[in-house]
Length: 446
Image 1 (cartoon, rainbow, N blue to C red):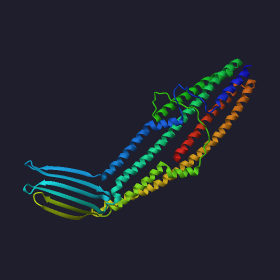
Image 2: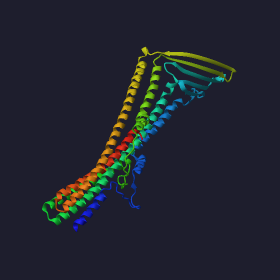
Image 3: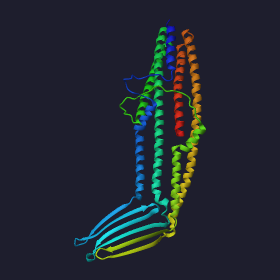
C-alpha cells in the first residue's frame, strides 16, 4: 500500500519539477512583481551610470553653444576723463567675426576739443586672411568639432542604454535560473526525507545510512541556491538604481522559444548602424576636415585690412574722411610647424581609416561567432530535453526495481540525482540560450 502511495507522490513531485517556468503570481495586494521589460524601463530612468552618461551628453550640447559664440558680436563702451574733470572721450565699438574669419569692427567716439567743440569720429574696419588660413572651413572647424563630438556622445549614450538593457536581461535570467534551481533543490530535499522514511521502513542499514546522508547534502544545495538568489538580486538592484533596502520580486514566468535570426541582414544592419562604427565614421569626417585646415596653413599667411574713418567737429562745419588699406605677409622661418602638423593630421587620418576597417571586421567576426554559438546552444537545449525524457523513463524503471527489492536505495537515489541534475541543466541551458540571443542582438545593434 505504501509503495503505491510512494509512486504517486514521486510522480506528482517530478511532474511539478519538470515545469521549466513555474506560473507563480504575487498577491494583488502584495509587493509588485517585476517583469523583464519593467526592469529595463526602470533601469533606463534610474541607472546611475546611465544618468552620468546623460549629463556628459548635456555638457557636449552646451559645448556646441559655446563654440557658436565665436560668431556673436562683442559690444564695448568706454568713457575717459581729463585731469580737470571735464568729459574727455566717449567711445563705443562693435566687433563681429563672420564666416571665413572676416573680422568687422565698427567704432564711434566723441571727444571734447574745447573751443572747436566736440570731435566725432566714425570708423569701420575689415580684415581677412587671404592665404595661409582664413577659409570658411577653418572658421567653422571649432563648431564642426563640437557638433561631431556631440553626435559621438549621443551614439555612446545610445550604446550605453542598450548595454544597460542587455545587462539587466542577463542579471534577470541569472536570478530566474537560481530561483528555478532553488525550487528543484527544495523538492530534492523533500524527496531525500521521503527516501529516508521508506528506508527506515525496510530496516536496511546501508539504505538508511545512504538516505540519511543525502539530506544534509540537499540542504547545502538549497542554501547555495538561496545565496545565489540573494546575490543576484543585490547585483540587479545596484545595476538599475533600485533601493537596496526594498524588496524586489521578479516575474518567474520566462517564455522560452527559439529565435529566428537572419545573419546576412543583421550583418548589413550592424555595419551601417552600430554606434561604434557610426563614431568611427564621424571621427574620419572630423579628421578629414582638420587635415584640410592644416594643409591650408602650410602657406605664408597673407592678411588684408581695409579701414575707413570719418571725423567732424561740432563747432566747425568741417569733416574729414580717410580710407586706408594694407596687406601683411607673415612667414615663419621655413614654416616647419604648420607642415609638421599637416603631416600629423594625415597620419591620424590614415590610422583612423585602418581602425575603421578593423572595427568593421571585428563587428562582423563577433556577430558571426555569436550566431554560431546561438545555433550550438539551440542544439544543446534540444539534446537536453531528450536527456531529461530518457532519465525520467530510467527513474520510473529504477523505482519499480527498488519497490520490488531488486536494487538498493543507492542506485535509486543516483537515478533521482541524475534526473534532478539534468533538469537543472535544462533550465541553465534554456536561459543561457536566451542570454546568447540577447547578446547577439546587442552586438548587432538592435
